[in-house]
Image (cartoon, rainbow, N blue to C red; front, top):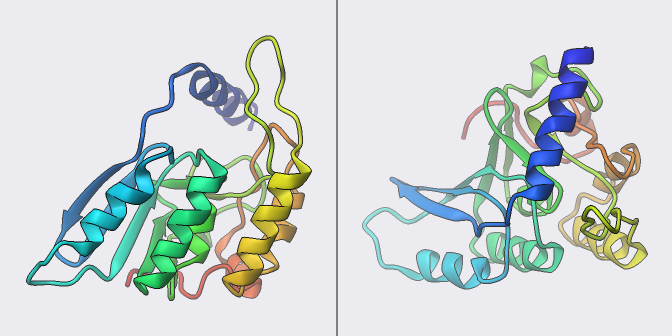
Length: 197
């Protein structure tokens, strides 16, 4: 357990120091995959991708992201719902943290694959990762809770019909993530299935 805590802290420190890179989108069949940090400009890129004519319409969004820009995450969530995409997080090999959870809950069906094996809490490296909104910190100025960010997140969760996702965010400290297991995600309505689409 100590090893996981040290590793999680190291990953968080590396992510905080690394420059943010916009999400990468790729398509395979009826599935689009979003991988990487959510940053300004991602909405326009995803909108263009969803607007392309293709033989097989896109119906699934697979997520693997540390989160990123809250306002861009809200706009992406609205786009996911507008296009009636199902969302998938494979808790065996992917994470969907922070602003990424906004996209996940926007899915018309929400598949939290492999989450039945997760331990509830903050020790897991993969799965959905909730926390309260905060400002981005640096070496000189630490991250601070953001009441405005929390309000925006709670409003989006409620608008997507998953108001209890805010309960998960409130379980985490400012520098940690709370990862629900499959049973909790289903009970709170965050996930609709623990199997692939």
